[in-house]
Length: 305
Image (cartoon, rainbow, N blue to C red; front, side, top):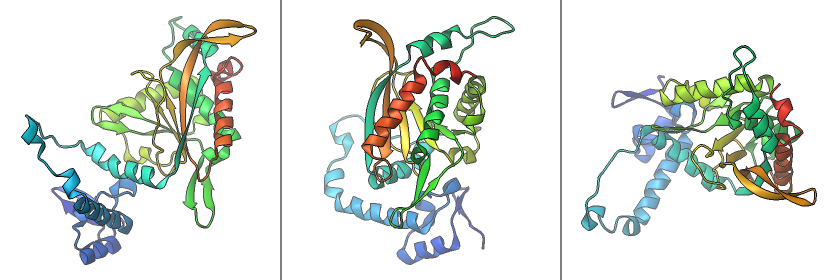
């Protein structure tokens, strides 16, 4: 049977089993946001849709007691489509994953000095490589040492997880359409220049809505950076089915006590959220310590190779 259902001139993917179940419970499958690849609707999505409707009815007196327009002028706007699609995934992640966030700071003084000294060997012009390219490479190095961070839970009751042997890093891209998280594939096989160029390309493709939907799936871990906007620490939500996400704030100058004296250093705020079912606090702290070492003076130069 055809898995496509017409929805206001758009195609909605759903299995015959899901459509049959939807009819039995009185749900129009076209009203349900699918959680599978390409927005495909499955039976679980329909159950969650029904549950959300019941919860809304129970809380109607709290949430719909007054019309906002009674208190002043308002404007009603449609929620952007990408945010609509992302919403159930975020809710699912926040409800079902026991999040814990480890906050730390990395000394990136030497890394920044090295990054700012990079020049094109042919033109002599300064290379424009963002700190994020270095961070991505450093994260992959830590994933090698801590493979549980590069995993997904398949069946927690039976104690099964999938340990990934690839390194596809998700990057949260801020666009006018909403937040998108495409993947940079096989980062372990790419140098800083290649990662930097790919960062530019996928960011541009997302903003122009030219990114392939497949690029949003199959990640190892996600990095979300607010460095270009501002802020320090926050609590990023894990991008299910991954088990960890790294939040990066804006770097700033800080006085640190090193070699018996205070000195000004450039530090980077790190916020590592992880799934406590798989990763415990001690392991998260060790991961962050390793990541800090990777971003420090002893490793920054190697990352550029």
